[in-house]
Image 1 (cartoon, rainbow, N blue to C red):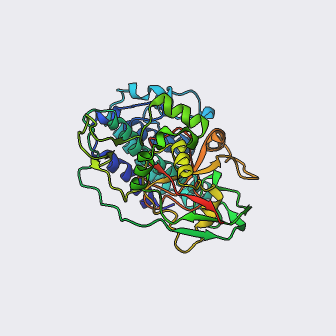
Image 2: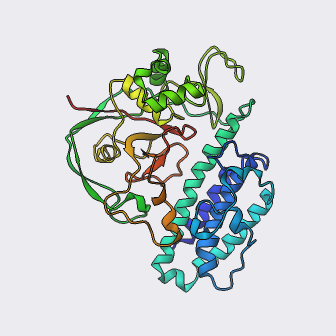
Image 3: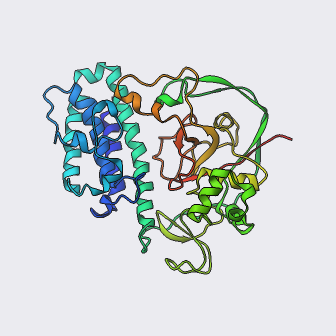
Length: 396
């Protein structure tokens, strides 16, 4: 196991949190989000609980009470602090959480330098799982603080530099002939258990868009009454949009919005409030909004298997996009799926109901973390992630 990789991943988490004040890092703006401080503590809890305590002789936990505070959802590892109340944890303070990270990192260096680490492939796979888990929380750290900042009337920027403008590209369709396709992870390299087993699916011929739907595209949908036409929407989505007053993507500011008055559409993001860039991929969409747009555009969302099969097309860039892409596939186990043994078996399998699969990656996904077989998943109403869409359609 590469100790340098461990240090790099752990350092990247702290670099992402560095622009945030201690007050920022204690915010929890909704039950589905977590404070940045909690993300840093929980990823540390993972290494302490699943690697150091059972494997490093003589290891002394930093604070035994942290086992309760920073467990996320692992029933096999005991009770935990309620998820909606993570924002109430003013103690431990940020300095103590960072001390916790240093304590665990020092012990992990001892474990990684041991003879066991050089010989035990199971240990190496658990360390890699912990690092991949931390990379997932790196993205969540950004999406969660962005949601928290969106609740602040000042709409503060996480990053001060200006975003790079997008590039205008016409919508071009890529054809796939269908037939039998192999999907799921195969070969060397890490994959989560939900990415396998690799298996065969039968696809009908289809076309898939070369690029994602842009903000300019979505502005046309809004201008054409997309949020006022129930015929475009799935029933649950229409009811939710009406109940919550959706009229545009989550972080868009309509002309005249008092939080950032302007005569033009603006978008709030990690760089603060910026003029709408019509060429940038639209993000912060629920599945319902993505499906409504696809219906309006005379197309549909791809299935996750079409999306993965399209990765073999020469002009398809699967993991370099700025937004996760909703698919029309429910998050179900693949044929023959078996969760990992032990507590980590709770990592994915028990969430395989009531959610939709997203594919690709986003501007918040750590470099090198995404891959064509990666299955992200969220409930259809979720819209605080960097989630957008790519269109598909049958070949006529």
